Amino acid sequence: MTIQFNNETFRDDYSFSNSDWAIKRFPFPFHEDSYMYSVNMEQHRGGPAGSVYEKRFDVDEHYVAEMRDRALVLADDPLRCQSLPHMTLAGWDLLELIMVSKSEDYPDLFELHRDGNRWRWVNKPMGIDDTFTFLDETTLPYGPMEYITRQAQGDFCVLDQRDDMLWMDAGMVTTQADWSLDFDIGMNFFEWHAPVPLAHEMGIFQRALKFLLNIQQGSPARRLNWTMTVNPLLDTSPENYHKWGIQKTSLTPENLGAKQHLRVELQTFFRLPRSNALVFPIRCYLCSFQDLMTMPKWGRRLHRVVRDLPEELATYKGFIDNRPMMLDYLSQYDDGLSTSRGIWPDLETEPPLQR
Amino acid sequence: MSKFQFPQSIKSRPVYGTLAPQPGKAHLMIADAEGAEALLDLAEQDSTIMAQAHIIFIPKGTDFSDKLRALSPAQFYEGPTYEASIQRIRHVLEHAHQGLQVYLAGTEGLMGQAQNEAMQAGIPHTSIQTEHRGSVARRMQCVHCKGITEDVLFDPFVCSHCGLNLFVRDHYSRRLAAYQGVCIDAEDPGNIPDPVELYS
Image (cartoon, rainbow over all chains, first blue to last red; front, side, top):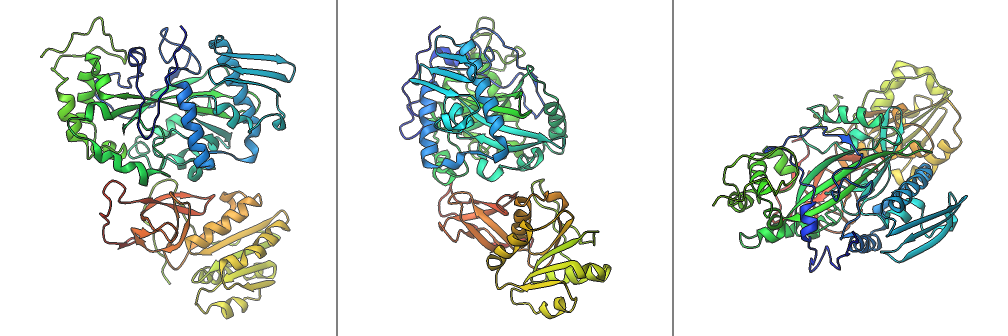
């Protein structure tokens, strides 16, 4: 299908919205009626047609608007994109991976023409047609990582692998769930995850690291993560927290369905061929509670997950104060019926709300 | 003098040890204030390393300089501030040969910044010895304006650059040699708890 790109904003007037198509394919992150940390990794080898799992780098109706928002963030704070000097080769690896994947997966939107190291890249949605020399930085307007991630939805962490450890040595991070690349750059896997509660004690990060260190070229992996965001704000950065934090207090029982968003990260992991680095794209999907409630199964389940979430996690995810109001809203959509397993909405087989 | 035992914390928070003499052709020792006592203890363990030692000491109002000089290090420099000593530290690191041992002692801010210089000179942070002595004050970076506030002893504190009220996190960046300070009243402007001394 041809994607109709939305003209929308993720700030100020927040004109962002999801079409029915986008709601239906939203990556709802709960496969059962409760949530606890796990290393929930699986192979990233496609998925149901039309789902966010189908392509290597999902492109959706928010693409052009998200790239516009990224450019605004970078103009305001260029430190959101950084690459330590030894990471340039990994940046070229990433550029190649994205250009090849997108031109193969979306031939109507992207074209890559290669003649030796002379490459021509055509990005139709963004109106870009550039010719450059692969591995020659002087032929691009930005470094290779910045160039291509200004044209790809989601944040990108490029991790160096050495001493049986992963190091956060480069990244493009403008749609983050409240962490700072500028602060964390150069840290190892355990250090940048240090503020996460409970998971260290559960051995989650030791197991995840072991898994990630062994990811091979051509065998990417993926998992979902989630948090909550008031208003469809992509840039929930610590840098700007003193500006956006107050928005959390703007929820009322009347506006909650429209303002409160479930924020889901589709995290994927690809080994890069020349540098042996690991790229960790973190793609953010937002969906308002009222849109989620159009899927009866998600309504039932979200109520149960939010209600039963341990206090530490609700605090860490930043919605402990709003949880009672969220539950008042969500409980209207939970009739107590059982839910089918798995994340898919199963709209045809799950019964409508019984009240 | 007894050493302060930092409580168990998150994995990005530095952990300090006790300086021990290591075989090496040269020994760079950087300390501030009570960090001098760690160097005196080091010399007691093996006084022979002092013949190849370069001590850079920032007294911060203490009177340890004469005691350190009495160790007869090969080179001794007393700096009025850390900033004043940076060029000398860089010079030493730049001209260092394989086998240089680096010893850091004193406040977290001094050790963190000197460690960062050594890392930039190509020395892995894991091979740099550190020992905390003296003040438990922290070097804080405001995550909002990126300004550094030195010697923070109370939580919350006021950013010395942008004036926001920040709470003190244990999340630490070696590259910035600083802990992270985050606005404490973003969700409830003006609601700022009374400052409490760290570890009290």
